[in-house]
Image (cartoon, rainbow, N blue to C red; front, side, top):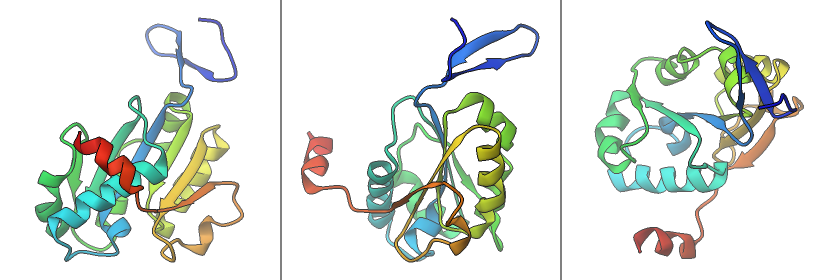
Length: 173
């Protein structure tokens, strides 16, 4: 494959190019999107559906979901099984776990997009570094819960919105 604007060179034991067009890594803090713990399991499923719609989740995307144990106990069985789910308790537990999965350098080499499902300010330095290294960054968060630190950095910003009812009917069929 010839090198293009949308391909990046991967080096290791062998050198080759991979096509990264439209591939995204989603780092999703479910508790942040839900506005905190204490929801019923079906609420987390609805939030997940809203996230996939708002974020533009594609089949080729990679997804990592993290939250505290209380939320995971309610949400785990209502979320798709194909995506890894992580549990971390304590202050900023989910954020720190997600930020430690892969570094911004890896994101910039392997994905066109970094999509952060959270409005927490803890993600800002990570997002800025991934952007500096060449990844596009999209922030998806609930209205009114996005840190002001995300503003003015050239990130694509999307509010978490409900999936239209017709789309929900298609999922059931």
